[in-house]
Length: 418
Length: 88
Image 1 (tube, rainbow over the protein chains, first blue to last red):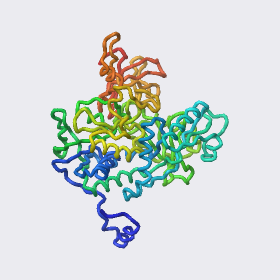
Image 2: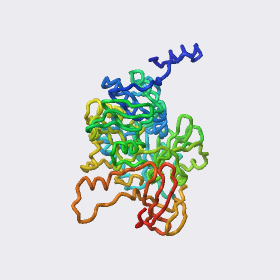
Image 3: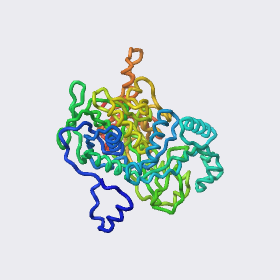
Image 4: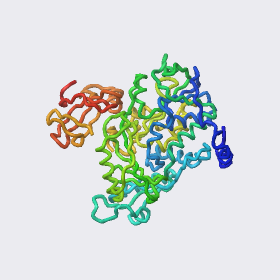
């Protein structure tokens, strides 16, 4: 594989940029693989990469119905954080933070990881107490957390509404300084390029139409490009999980819902951090191009549409303007939607299934992007070793049956309430 | 925006309604021996189909009654609406 560096850039500039190697190939599927990963999103690509890198399993195919990076990895708001209270979520995400910090060097691809810090705003004394508890839990797990008072928040984001007579005054906030953002497309492309160079076949425009299961063991898949045999198969399809589960006669603790995001026209730098509104569901950061990147609530009903509805966007942006009044002067550049695999306790599932050789990775809710490296790393381990790693042992499929839920927000099973 | 025909009030905009989830999930009967598996299925497991989906909505800014809506989860087309105690 051609290494990307300033020298290769200069060399290729002299040749008019005509001799760059393709970043990944477009192979026809072989008849058999050791492992097939279904879903060529961030998590699927990362899983294939870590299977090859950490476990030396390279006879791997990624089967993607559309094109790689066309789903949620290209539709999210690029936020990376590990500000969780529960041990399972905190330790898993913080492991991921270490992978994010070294990702550009590891993949030889600039993913533009920018640890600019995230601030969750608090709007009451009670909320400050909750944040102080969460911050302490985070610090016990080795995650950085700083509780800010009103004046400290004002120094960082003076453009927020600090007037006295507002409905939700800013009391303070909880900050994770090491949180940040990254270029989401680059993450997909970086993983794809490295996985391809180690022998992984990335097969795009190939739909999985069925599974070959016999005596409780997976034997292969049926696709629009023919049948493919495999010893092990990993499902990594986010919002399409229920569609494939139905073909396997499985019913899962997952509902598919629609989440929208939007960006404003680009403006000069004003916001250095990621900021979330504490009295509703709204988050905001500024991209390197200057656009304000914003998102918030689910549309609130089961949907596979990948496009949003205006009432929810209006509601979310009302919260945004309450937080940052200057947003009301901006023009909207683009809005879009993606479909989320909402689990019944708000936490993901990375586990084996009752079918031998079939592995499940789903339930990422709002937080799939930041989990990309840790999800791929632990899913690769689960597939290669046929047992979960201790980092994803809590993300078991049967926790709903045994009562070991990881309900970070305390929402229960109404996944569409936020 | 969705337009939902409340069987009690007529056609109204989505803003007046609140979603209540899958209407085909049935709570196990009272005073009957229920296995853990059945409770698990009732509380947590959902088909979440792509296509026709029968769901509960509450006309929260209208008559406040619960209704059933048969809706396509891919196209958002609404096929029919029913009173909460009516079957399809």
